[in-house]
Amino acid sequence: CYMWWDIFPVAIGAGEWTECDALFLEVLGALLSIDHDAVRESALHGLGHVSGRRELAVALIDSFLVTNPGIRPELRRYALSARAGCIQ
Image (cartoon, rainbow, N blue to C red):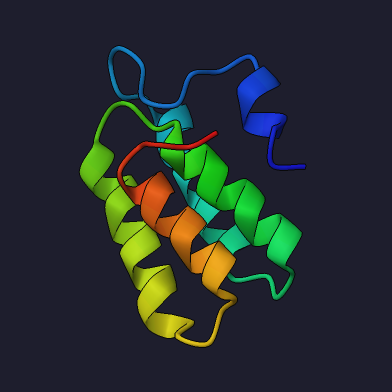
């Protein structure tokens, strides 16, 4: 499910920032709060694709990491990659 953001027909933050972009970030933040690693990985992947207002995506990822210190090491590494915009 994390590849959803690769095929979704909207580029988050590409070009002028819109209300739609803000809503996508809100959804991605909400997905991070769901206690299921596949859903969280999907949200992190989407945040890794954010090109405009990168600081907002980074803030969501930082908050996720702080509030979830016990996540699997693999998910933590993926979060840090997404934070840097280096997602696969």
